[in-house]
Length: 258
Image 1: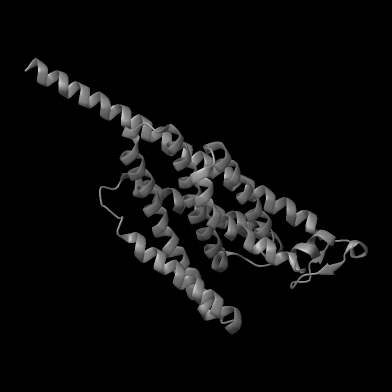
Image 2 (image 1 turned 45 degrees about the horizontal axis):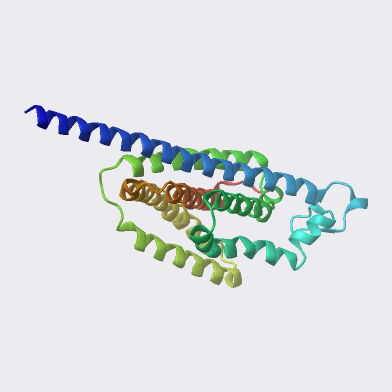
């Protein structure tokens, strides 16, 4: 009996240690993601301020809604450089897997922060086309929804791993619809895309949170701290993308344009 109690106590202590490690791991994921979001917000705000002017004598061009552009703004929003800014983050996402395999955890984290900066540059135009109040309101709505969805994904006992393939198919469908609508310019299609986008990335928020938790539980016994540190960065990137996309799709129909 004494031996059984000893084994049970050891198992309980081990479970408590895993729970504590999981909480620390999730805090690192959310912390890294939050820093990335802050970098993106600051970069977008700073670039939008440097790219626009109210002085006609200092302007070298203007954008669709009549906003006057500085030389930097003209380069970012109207020159071929805009395509580089648009596609550079996408290329970095494709290269992230190689970084995770070959680089240290610190290098992977730096790569993520550089990515977040480039995203901020590419998103800076939202401060030109949308009012600051609507951007802040949409961000708060997104933050509340994200927190609830991520908490549910972390605490639910339901296995939602099967959602992954359907959600990825949904993302591909969204991309196809958005590309088609570049030519059609249909407000109805864009409205439908924005609603579906919110729903799909809401699902991905819960799915990715549970996946981060499950990956930690599956690998913690191996004691590979370097892998766990890299996994935290990878998880932060996934949740960052979920939050960012949900925010952008919500902004499409909640945001007030200038």
